[in-house]
Image (cartoon, rainbow, N blue to C red; front, side, top):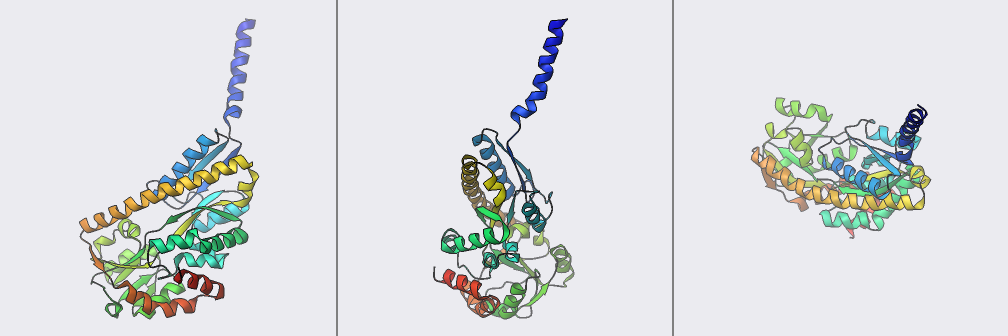
Length: 322
């Protein structure tokens, strides 16, 4: 009987001890807006896998896709309050750090190569430093976003083709001013209203990356994808500075190394996805139109420059000099 009691006690104590033996020293709550199948979430899953393995379980990464922790601004605020730890965010950071506005300026970049030079050089360092200083968030990786393209029911090849075009844009003053300068009639509108408005003819066109053109089924109400590439942008994976610095140096290194590998993995996924998106939209009946991007950029430039403050102007000029 004593042996049975002793065995039961040992088993019971083992069961009680098990959770404590395997519990992580640190937990990273990583919330973002993309769904489970999106390449950003796949990259986040790779990050989780690497961090947990290389930290020997001392760090647990909990991923919350689909805005489970709230929208982009909600999660930023939660990280600042210490109730979340990581997210994927973009030009919304300009609410605190004005230099972050450069992450989505029309015709700031002529191609992906120029953008990479900016992000990974002095310009990116300036933007990241201001983000860290003003928000308490540390950018640890960046992802290229697909360029924004113009969809319509007539081909658009040069600015003159925009005359009278009723174009939905997000409620961003810079976007409104730019499209007005190009000759269109921009109409700010919630994204949720765009499909119905195109269907009913309230508007003639809209602009978004290929990923949103596909997911919103705009192929059902638009015939052309005009390759304006008018906004090339990127997005950061950020972590709360206090959270990162609360970890010992060896674990900070694990997190930062895993972030580098996550960035490389997402870059591969992104290149494949851009090819898939074009193929899918063409198979759905959309025609891709080559556009005189230089003519668009030149006509848009005065409106873009007029919208930038002094420190943004300096970064914009530095980009043009790359």
